[in-house]
Length: 381
Image (cartoon, rainbow, N blue to C red; front, side, top):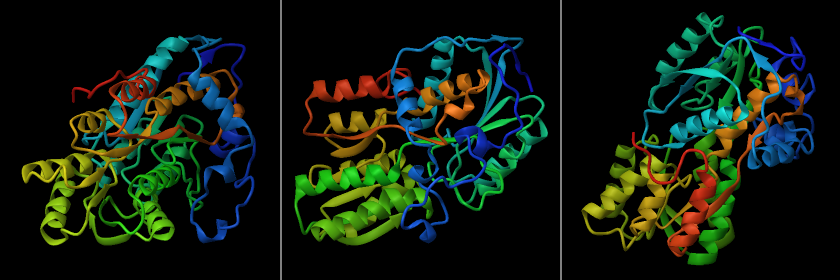
């Protein structure tokens, strides 16, 4: 593992949990429903004020790294970046550009997969552990959290050689024998409730909807399940069909085609990610139904915003997408400077709703802020 020649660096053998929060055990506090979950939520594992402090750093101008380097950092990235969503590519760009601004030298090695290729991620995790003397940091974007729990713990166990960060999840599993140093994500649960309030305010009560859900697990339970529970409880909505499209464009297309044929009473189709939203839109356009169905996406990626501009997608919970990558760069800098105890254990980016009733200028302004490092518009893939 290549460390730095700097007076600011503090060598430590602390665990990932201790490094992130300055505590040796989790949770730091307990919320009323903690016993009903196999995971912790951010408020249970973040020391007070650390998340807000980190969000302020990420939103501010870069402050140069105070140390010196003997060699570039070696960063491995294991993530499902071969899928339609540009979340992974954008946060890679955000991380690397922020590292450039910080003056940290680095080299990256990417291990790409699709979100349904769970075993391939195991192969990659084993390879990184085997080559742990090569890498300084590993960033893991799990295909699905529970399925990849063993791989996260396996990587996080190598604290003498690797610092492990997890992308795209914010619910640390209690069962993990070894926790990563930090988690970086947007809260799917918070996004679902934000979207619920917007949809009820706009569309009212007693609506009939159908859903393209992802893969059974925490992410879909929050993005789809929490949204469904919210609109049904608060506004008496009815869900007539739920299709599991495995976060794939093909799944969104197939689910929407079935909904249009068999459940014409559904006036809303809720999609749990970008890929399924794009497949859903494609299916609607193919039969001229895109103006009759209210369609949602998830994440506010460039592809989704372009679909909103075309009048094909109606609304999406929009992440300030580059926050995750930029926060990871800041975490690396803090770790190198011996300040890992200042970091929140779970970093969360901001979420708002982008929709078709916004002006072009309003959508452009949201996009500029969200993609300030990775650039506006759909990425070339």
